[in-house]
Amino acid sequence: NAGVTQTPKFQVLKTGQSMTLQCAQDMNHNSMYWYRQDPGMGLRLIYYSASEGTTDKGEVPNGYNVSRLNKREFSLRLESAAPSQTSVYFCASSAGTGQRNTIYFGEGSWLTVV
Amino acid sequence: TQLLEQSPQFLSIQEGENLTVYCNSSSVFSSLQWYRQEPGEGPVLLVTVVTGGEVKKLKRLTFQFGDARKDSSLHITAAQPGDTGLYLCAGGGRGNKLVFGAGTILRVKS
Image (tube, rainbow over the protein chains, first blue to last red):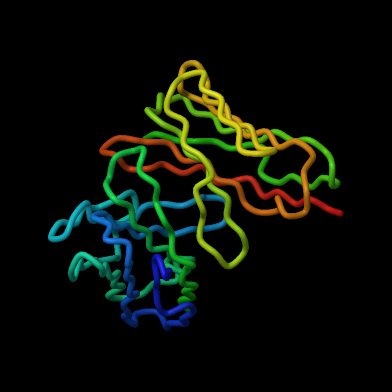
């Protein structure tokens, strides 16, 4: 089973460039998330989608946009990349948004902005 | 802002030793989850605790949720090299959003 698949795995961008991180899940989950992980700071929620057709800001949404394309896919876009956005990005999904739901994570996308 | 503080940040021990990792907050959480993350992979859920004072065991791992639901601990008995990884706690926060601690990096040497 693929679970949560995100692409690309690695990307180097120049400051000001744009890019989209793609994410798809095959577990028929309603909720999807984008997190970033930085050393010493744990995982921080960027945006989430509780269900198809809805998106909401998380803890650190500035500089990002998202699209819930359909139930399977949730993309994250950086319109004008900045060095502060160098991080590891994780897409995740869960059946619902209840606090007892298991969240399944992808393998991560390493992004470097120079 | 709800915050979770994990301690220690790093832990390097010999195979067979016992260890405890702590997750503390000044806020009350309705649930607490523990994840384990290996290099190059995403976090994987180990356990969810939901009741104050709850203790859950997963083989050599024992998880406890504090009575006041503000803290949790993970105890590993007779650690093995396969336990090496980053351990993250996460609390059920406002609006059903999880709040993650910064993590504890565990290295078990054989």
